[in-house]
Image 1 (cartoon, one colour):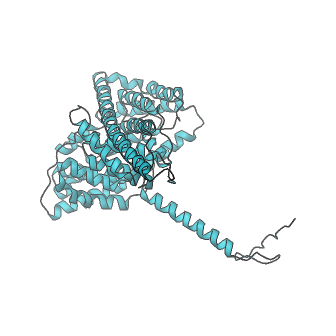
Image 2: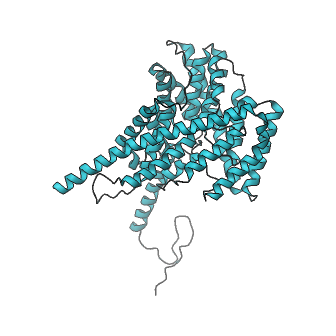
Image 3: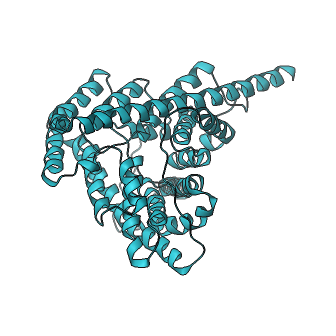
Length: 447
């Protein structure tokens, strides 16, 4: 009895130490990723000719991944699939994601630091979990030996530190892993890691500060703006998700050398940017957020940013999708402000939440991010915008399908179990008898 109590106390202490360490690692990863990409953006703006180096930088990213023996088609955001499948997150993914995302932004590619920070933080948390040797608290005989929840703590911590939104970070991690039971049972550890990251990140000069939004009083025009932004985000989010998925699938299946594909994609991006003067759409899109919230954005700026982001991340360049998606949504929301006479900042905030929910398949995280970034008075409006955006959009997101994928999987398992039980209950078929489909059953052979 005393031994069991001692073991339980020890595991609780290890879980607490791990959660705090994972939170600190997530905050440091977020700060490092955003500072590195800010430096890359500064160099890109100072030396505009670096856009001509995009083909070589794309090929270099492929070379880095090959050198570190990482899957060439992997993205920093692919760590989500590792957590879903309970696979260990490669430690080499952290430096590879940081270096390759730096190269992408240096050449003017459209990418952000969020998925890069997720990869770095998840990799660190996964390693910390093995180092601290956190085990199921239920006891040595517990059936679950899943370790993916440690990486999920890192995901929550990185998101929390990037946006100063600990509750949204927890919801983001839970929704990305489709509320996996092993992660949900560790909710206290995920919460602790997320809030620890938020506290550690406060004095650090990293992360993203979203612009302020003017939240209106209750009115029909404000409600109409939310619904309009939600419907528009459903359409745009579906198109963005399908485009990104199709390009990445084509990149993985092409018979050409991946470095050549990345170089060709870089050349196409360079040609588009120079031909149409799209230099301001390069990078993560943080400057575009300011334009959207201040009412300076163009009507179709969201389409340009979405196109460049899908091309950048679909042809082999590495980088994050979350910050570009927020900027696309803000630009889309701002373009919806005119028809209903809404304030540009409010429309941009609702568009960012709605498009993020549709493109990432994370509606709860989108609402909580709006509440923590723009004030809790924005939460009801954000929910009104997120609802049509999520329900009307196709279940194809930047990180794969959402919670419906889990429901479909459980439904298929149930059907297989029912078919197996029915097969056991059926009497053996006689020779010459007909099946219910009208085909002759093959006679059984006995030795």
